[in-house]
Length: 84
Image (cartoon, rainbow, N blue to C red):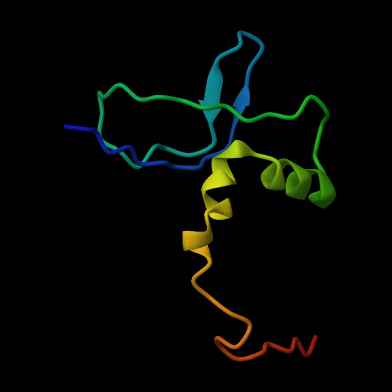
């Protein structure tokens, strides 16, 4: 039987001892082993263009290239016009 994994996104800081300090408590009971993926930027902050480039080139979204994922057409829904 294959295990189902749940993802939680939190922010934190890596301290001088290279230990991860989370900004909030994890919403899961412990003690429990977890898998951790750390995303960080080698520069202080990424701008919006850098985030969009990383997201569009990430293999994590390759499943969206499958034609079976194209379930909507241009005639679906109603147009949204931002009045701001």
